[in-house]
Amino acid sequence: MTNPEDSPRNPAEDEARLRGALPIEIHGRLRSARIVERRAVVVAEAGDLGAKARQELETLIEAALIELADVDEVRVALIADRRRRMIIAVGSGKGGVGKSTLTTNLAVALAKLGRKVGVIDGDIYGPSQPRLLATEREKPMTQGDKLVPVESPHGVKVLSMGHVVPPGKALAWRGPMAGKALGQLVDAAWDDTELLLIDLPPGTGDVQISMMQDSKPDGAVLVSTPQDLALMDAARAGQLFEDGEIPIIGLVENMAGYACPHCGEISDPFGQGGVEKFATALEIPFLGRIPLRMETRLAGDAGTPPALGDDEGAAPFVAIAEKLDRWLKNGAI
Image 1: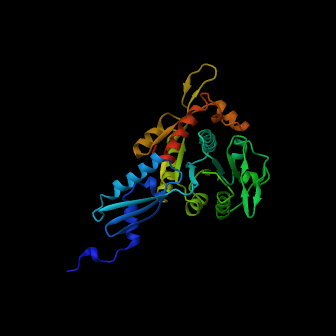
Image 2: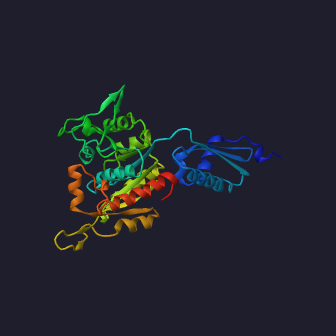
Image 3: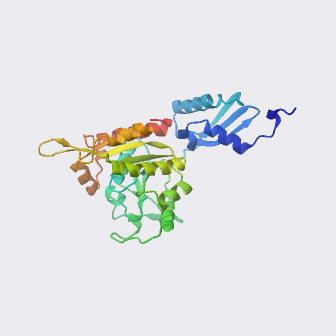
């Protein structure tokens, strides 16, 4: 009788099964996975990890795969000869929830933590990043056939259609053209930039689909205000990322509570705690909440992100950026 183990292996099926046994958070790091004579051999990207995080990644892979019935040994090869640029998408299901402001301030806070960060304004039809990062009148140079990102005064590089198209001009582009435009921004001459934050337009349209096909992010951050209507749309955005096998790093609750500048009383025009409850129900990490403050709006209009400072206006952005930084290092908050 033929021994099943003597049958030829199917490499594609083996790789799919090995990936399925590993946490989705590290799928973006996997370069190959195969089984050779009951030995699982995995190659993973770890160029952006420190020694401790590399050891933790190796241990996690070994522990998960050794449990498989046809695996007696696990060998892990970590690639670290060059740093891989990571991409994080910042999305929402609807407009007006503060996604662009969050992206800007996370980028600034991560830069303060020592990361080389770039921001891509994926909202092709309604770009906000030139104003938020004080680069409205800047025009990108070209390097061969690639755009060169604009240097903001806050230590963050940025590219936006707002830098390319004259101010106030409306873009009457069909969806595929917008998707191609985002691809050009991602494929720009980012040089030593190690992390790109993509400020996505609202919804689940052509731009998001093109991004997932051509420049698959390593993870996604979802932002919503607390009311049910915004959460319904955030759920749709989350489903899109899950369908594309993009890990959802966590949810942020924006515009959470407003302190009256005259009496100091806190009111909740958009409700309270809805995003945290939503995150708990879906078993998705809750990254934090950002209060509704007049100072944040004024700072955004002036191109001076609150995260630049060390006061209470900066604190919620910095706290969320620190969690994101941990995820980038360890694959977990």
